[in-house]
Length: 179
Image (cartoon, rainbow, N blue to C red; front, side):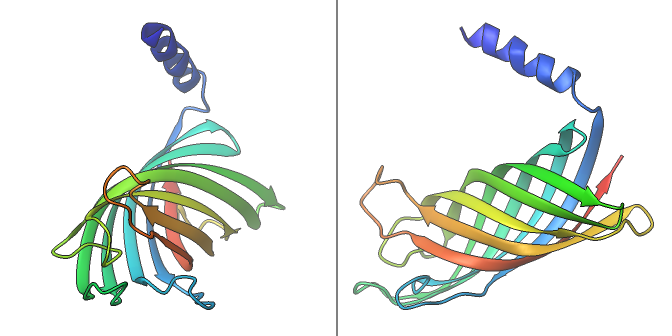
């Protein structure tokens, strides 16, 4: 069964649009409503490699580095944390008149924080779930700028001692290049 799945995935990649790309993105938390996103503030930077599966659909693998202001939470002291991780995502893009394009994106990944855990009362290792939407601008010298909003969820999925997780919305800016 695994061999069949590997051949199917290889077929999808080989039959794809045969275009690759790179991107650099930065995000900062924007929304805090009540206890929504009260665990801290993750600032994330990512460098990704993408492959277009169709002219309007691309798959991305992003290496992510984070700086996190961790709030005191449920009796655990906060502070400053850093995190490294990987996110895998799909991005669908729909353009208008070759000037502006809407994109929708969703994915998942994992990260490990140090020297303290994020959420403060949780674990160092967490899974990530993300979903977002935004706009891509016209290409300038081969680089396409983008801006949008992204929902981010971090938790250990109750695989380790339970943590409360993090849910927040971040502003996202970036550039990508397709070749």
